Length: 229
Image 1: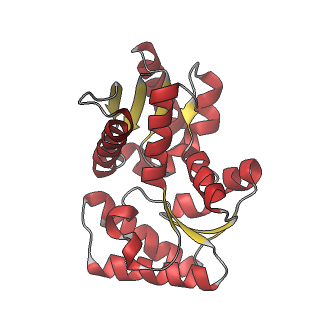
Image 2: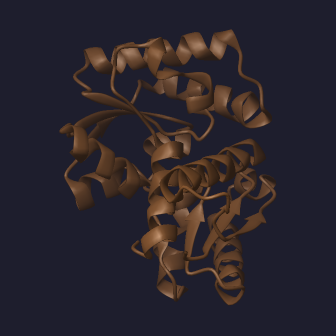
């Protein structure tokens, strides 16, 4: 098996979910009582909340290089938003980073859909870490909610979901957004916040749901088993 470095902490709830999923999927595929070799560095979420792009890039590069020196053969960032560091960090890193958008694109192609709705926090929905990569690298277009709904989604993610609070108000809001994006032509919905799959389950709606957390974890296990990024 190949050793994977995990950068977590934004939030720690999602980091636990990543760790659980990777171990469960590895056990299913390997049929073993063993578990995969993982090295975890959990960052303070306040780094992302300060919003200093240079500080964020610098810190993620430092941590990724530390993980590489500790034996990691690839890196997985255990959240959607921090993938904004990908272009900067990969230039200076000797090992690959498994991109969450690539994992999402693999699933979309597998089920034959190319026009998706995207839900998450504000940086994920309007920033340059997810949507441009889906379009430029995979030919997959995305649509997002209107500006008012983006603000409300960001509030739910920042003040509830990343704090481990999963309320009925949040669930109802995001299910409404799933329906609205589907009505606008989305063939599937990217659950682009690591905590969203904890809030919304496949049985909650009829839309194709693409939960980035579990799809990313599958990519991680593929690397652990075969060493392919």
